[in-house]
Image 1 (spheres, rainbow, N blue to C red):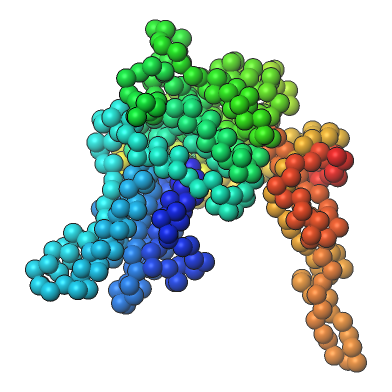
Image 2 (cartoon, helix red, strand yellow):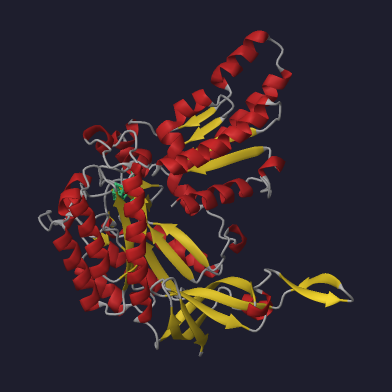
Length: 522
Ligand code: SAH
Ligand code: SF4
């Protein structure tokens, strides 16, 4: 989500004439897009902001902006700690960024030319700053703001130019913004606001334009992506087009909701993209919420060969007691039932997820239940996080962060080791198959002869030691439709690079915990 936000901001500013530079020291405007999900991410962002603030204190003329969740969650305090911050812009306000930069720039020019102390005083007092935060009003006024065109037009006006992305063959498309789930540990519903669903026509159009500009893979994004549901024929339209709308709420997934006007469900949306954008080789989606994952979605996946059979569906814990305190809304039996149903319909699916260890009150037995789940289910990988108490969340108010940090660390490492064994098993089960692989990275490695002295081979010439470039073996790596990493040997760097962005059939020959090796057969 953050990567897409950064790409959209870059595209928007580039189209207005701003130029991107390699080093932040060469920039006149420095913007940090931040994440608040865990404290560590905030600390990293804070230290970078602090470094630019120090340069400004030393007299450097630069506009400093903090974007994203940290601006929304902690912005005012951040400005207090670093008064050199000129711009705060929350994730739901990014369409306003050019205006904010412009205001600050004008204020700085005015300050430089200021004639009266009174004007300068006003500017210093903060009038020359740009602040756009949704604040607490964001959830209350969600219906109205959803229908406003601002943020939607940021998605729609993206730079379709392939140069806008690091991997031009792959692109993200947001289908919902925000989240209504309120897991007790999570800041996202507060920083990104209420769940808003984009009109399907806009999503399909965006996919089509990205495909026309060379994207072969599109990843649809949402915090609980399978909750996507758009009700047609509601009053909110902008200039004759359907507008984004807030989600129907979880009742829509319980089966007791009254029949409503025509809706586009997540399954309908997937089918539309698959049918209407045939040049896309791959359609993926993240992140799935393990409950409310309908049979209709699995059936569309089964019937649509270009939809990746890959589910990133975080379990978060293997203990029902912890899941209840997390307010996740499902039990482990329900999670396992969802996984069994998935593999019954899509036998070649792959499963991945996230876990939090050291949640308040997590006992040895709770943690053992998590380990047991990771041993039992075929997770190809899991991201594992130590619980990080976040200000403003229910968990920080209601529960004591009572698992000591060394225990959290031990549980994290233990679970990672179990995951490594599970990953190795999943990878091994794929050996012998021929599968499409989309190549996305090239790696050169000193061959074994040179490995004794990395990067160089020592040649002895008349008693002198001369360093010569090492012989290198080239590998090109990519991902299967199920997001398994596959590495293939290449003759040269050029032949490896020629495969980037290409999808080829690879025979999988051997497996490790992290990847598979194979050979191109088609
Ligand atoms: N919407 C997605 C995930 C969003 S955040 C989902 O529900 O699956 C990504 C991951 O960060 C979460 O899955 C969770 O594992 C982790 N996370 C979120 N808040 C956290 C916190 N306070 N401490 C530790 N990990 C957290
Ligand atoms: Fe956070 Fe839960 Fe929403 Fe995911 S579903 S973003 S973890 S509140």
